[in-house]
Amino acid sequence: MCKPTMQDIADALSTSRVSVWKALNNRPGVSDALRQQIQEKAREMGYWQPAAAPAAVQEPSHGRTVAVAVCRPESSLFWMQIIHQIAKDLSRKDVNLMYTYLPTGYREGYTLPSSLTDGSVEGIIVLNVYSPPIFQMLADLPLPKVYLDTIPSMPFDRLNGDLLLIEGREPIRRITSRLLDKGYTRLGFLGDVNYAQTNTDRYRGFLDAFAERGITPDPALSMTGALGLRTHYEELSHFLDKLPVQPDGFVCVSDYIAHFIQRYYEEHGVEAGRVPALTGFDNNAEYLNVAERITTVEVRPKTLGARLASKILFLLEHPGLAQEVSYVSSDVLYRGALAGE
Image (tube, rainbow, N blue to C red; front, side):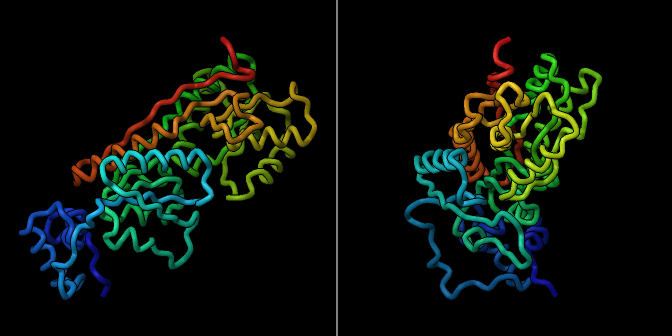
């Protein structure tokens, strides 16, 4: 027989997984009566046996702790600015931030770090995690959670937490519309559209601009499939080598992708005036060959960090509330071929 889960206990008592987690980990937020009821049900179902001296379990004197769960420890300055702002805002409320590394991909038998499951943290902020199995593990945790972005295959109502998204559909629609109106009709979209919900939204904005004009983009000019973690340049270069015609421009899902395209044309000796128009997203100053040179969308990482910190603090104080999905809008920065009216 399989070991019962926290959800099984919650269902048996018609309560929430969060309440069960708090009761079994001696956390505040549930009444003494409900705590006793949950612990008795856990023992009855064979889930849990109390420690010899449960009274010794106390709240840490140094304050509460929230985890930031993130992939890729070599994350760029963009991500580190977000994390730094989260840490600053949480520290003002005497809440500690625990950096928790997760792998970029799932391997058979992988389990989440014990710090996320043993009561060490009271909430989780999820950044830069896009592996579906790992995402599901995080969603199943009975803890308050806030996500920055999600994966398209995960319905919002299955996240069991709040979701913050960078609004990209409308900015990309406007960028693509301006390209089309200026005569750049042979356009391609570059970026894995199924990697993240924000990527999906940006691709939809690209398609919206064409649909508004009653035309269809040439699929041969777009590369929207999955890209290897460390082989972006090689795969994009192969795609560009095989293009049937020279495009007028590329709408890239990010400045990161755009800088690879710029690099390709520079390494192939293509004159600046003959390079297809490039646009990006994020206004990331780290990619020097496109920074402040291409049309992009402003994304303010410190603002995102402040929003994420505010949301997790709210959830810690108000557990069990209905989930929230919110969008942060951003401004288009017209540069290069699209500068001016």
